[in-house]
Image 1: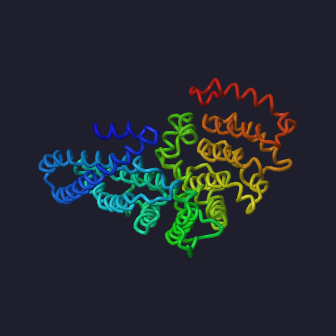
Image 2: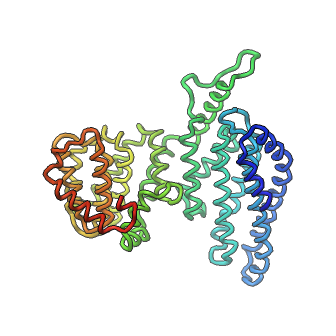
Length: 462
């Protein structure tokens, strides 16, 4: 631990001489730490395999206490290895110089994750300490892959690293139960990795494509970067073909955007906190915001392919959940999820559906449905109106203002906060018309002041 803290402190020094010293430290420490880590992981896996086959709980507990000490040392070595690779070399995104440790470490880390995951299920009801270790270890190992990809994206471009890691994460996201990885912390890290890879600017191919060096002169820095980008792009095309992209889009909306029973219970207990957790929380901290962030990036990369898919899900959801529905059905939850997706990618969906028709045929009716269970849809429609503001034209704009002011009077705090948030967007929009809001302005002000009295959190009052 002292070594790790020292390395972390030294990594904050930015002078060139300090960075050279850190690189020298890395060259001396890496091999020893890496070999110790590899030796420990073999010991851990052998012991976990043996303990998972035993039913004598007392014996398991006794042996697991000794094993936990090795596990703690192993995790500490992992921290040191990550710190050495991260800070021991300048980011290859600026130097285009491959960091060989990335190709050495990442495949082994991925293999360790694949070996440890089954023990999450094996020890769940048998040994709490080992179950917690398997859960924590898999999450931390995936975080290492995320960190190294972000720091050294070009070194990550290797057949044993980039495609293998992305493929593994996609399999986890689309079928976590089969992979034995249905715990939120690990799923979030898998989503983070796919998102960061998908939006990585170093992996975007240039218009000129790969540079073929036909002279004796070494490739320039920019030529090296173009070649890395071309290779990465080709790898991602193989691991993310069109049908897999469509599957991922469907899974994100139909599985990860859906409110769970726990979500709805938290909403009922504290609507105000629920609203802020859904909209203000850091996207890497919760599964649903993380899934939404991944969806936005994937859609941006494949918008022509995915726009019809999102519209299809939206229409399906609207057909199975009528505007006057009162029960919390799977159809209503799917419609909420579809509205979430439609709100995030409004800029492309406007080419596929008319907002005016959507508003008059469905949204306005859903807003007027005051049943307590319809708070789910009323809140989402309130947010949706703010997201689609640029697509609201003509007389419909005045109706939207009135609808949002009406939602300020809702019985549910979360719905009122969503309506208030969207009204702020409308006021800031360049085509905002005071005349359209004039008739309901007194009610709007009254309800906004009342809302500040009814809420408790500072973010709500602001």
